[in-house]
Length: 498
Image (tube, rainbow, N blue to C red):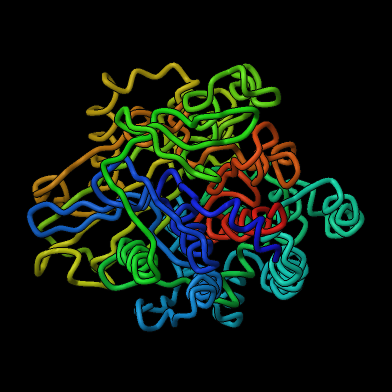
């Protein structure tokens, strides 16, 4: 490494402390840079925030860990051992999928267990399971094993990948590939829903995201004692241990650009100089709100607003003074409609009469998340982003009530409402207000083919020298593993630049 050049890019400021921001801060601090992490909230974590009320603990965002080896690489980069910071709990089954007809499937890493359940749906589905898993392995190998997810994607990376992607049908929609292997609608849902975990439509997201079922099968689905926030805390502790600086309560109002180069940031009317700036804030917020228009050729306001943004979600955090043994930690509870409901959310942007949901009950695995004999729950319902004209100030209470009534009367969580001790709702408006998420889109840019790889905003800013992005909207994308991989790709870009 050219010593003089490294001297020339010594102080680095990271805006936002989500998983992408924490990971890049650690990686660069470990490489000898002086890194300062700025967070507008009182605690680090970004979407992975946590709150406690009356003895109940709630993770507000991500709720499960996949690909722990990606987390391990962060600790290795800093010369530390993950096991000294983090205690992971393996889950099996990973989650339970409840179908509208009352049947359910325990999603397990065990092939025999899966085939036995699939056989009750359709004999062919059990027969084709192994073939499908072999296919997902090939996709996984391309993205993870060969490292395409951890390098900045440019046209020179993309072009050699296209023939391989064509052969893998990785550019077709996730659902269209899955339906070739499975016959029963329940099986088709089970293996195609994963793009929803990262804010995408299974009917539009490219099948490259089918690496996720393989990733889960091989590397497991994990939880950590104390909830997902203990992973945030473990990364923050690592960053501080190796000499990094964290400043919470520091909201950035501007990224200062001089002669086409990022020179630092403005917080609470103070200028903080930096040799490079990395934004883990929402991509649209970074360009539209933090950088003056005259510095942006590619990412003009018009271009930013024309991008397609992910769905949002309506969340209810519930503390319930009753146990529900029928729940696993992770539960998917589905409406009869699949494709039509997804179209209502993504295309028509209307609040449909029916809904599907993800119900997370961490107290099933970790009793410390709720008082004794009680359940801590987090209910996530996918809804349109704010491009849909839904008045959430008006709809918040009736919609929450409708969801709780459904869970009590139709799904069978007996006497749920009368046992609620804590309830907090979080709407698309809150994503816009609290998280600076454009249109309240919970996952940033929608992961569709025209916004994948080279077609996502670059890890290295296309407009401004020494400005970089990490997090859900850059390459390779959203979700905890995706956000952590963006840090690897961005680190690669920075080291190449110096």
